[in-house]
Length: 155
Image 1 (cartoon, helix red, strand yellow):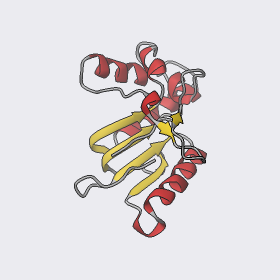
Image 2 (image 1 turned 90 degrees about the horizontal axis):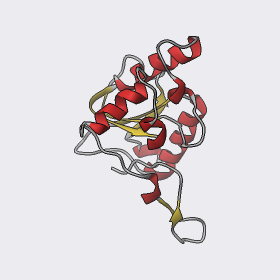
Image 3 (image 1 turned 120 degrees about the horizontal axis):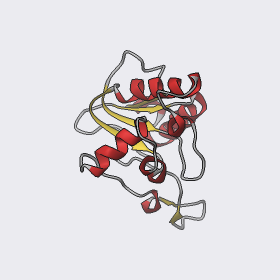
Image 4 (image 1 turned 135 degrees about the horizontal axis):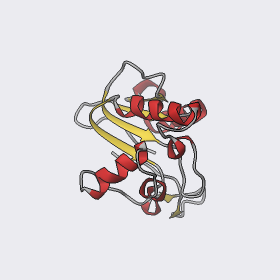
């Protein structure tokens, strides 16, 4: 995974889960090096009150199971409403661009009045672009490229 500086900007990678944030930090260290990290990764709560020119929001969703962001809705229980608040905090960390990593299927099928439905509306209106994760390849230990289900942000 590579992310980072684009014309001198710093990228923030936001995720709903602490364990995912830690895994992202480790992956970025592998790519950027500990002394030259230009990308910060953390939960939406950690970045509350901060902004980044570019934000990558890892929804930690796949096409098979609905997790927190796919279930977030304003009329649900406290967990679902917390998901809406977390989504709002995450996307308002950006100053100019936000990228989502997640399942396009979950976004396209999101119920009305949910954060992911708002993202689907933007995509349908041509105000964003989706990139299939199938185009991302995992080189594997043997160096061969094979399809990966992982969504990767390349800058």
